[in-house]
Length: 95
Image (cartoon, rainbow, N blue to C red):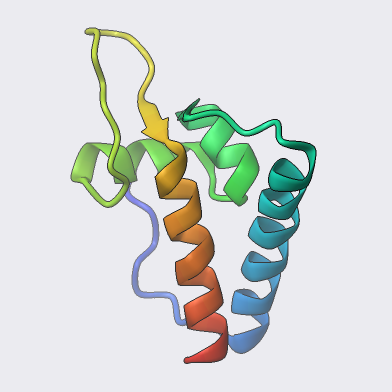
């Protein structure tokens, strides 16, 4: 199932996404519990993006991830969480 792509986002939608990703990202940095790599499920929990959407993005290259084993989990580098955090911030302040 593909995520909806033609639903317009409002400023409120961007504010909510930014708040979710910023609070979780800041918490990770503050507590120094960040790792170099995360699973798709962990990425979903950290960013607030639905798990199925994260998998879709991994399959289509929107999230830079590795899938080392057949049937294994996607491995997503921390830099992708940082990139999504930055994009959320950019979209919020530069709509």
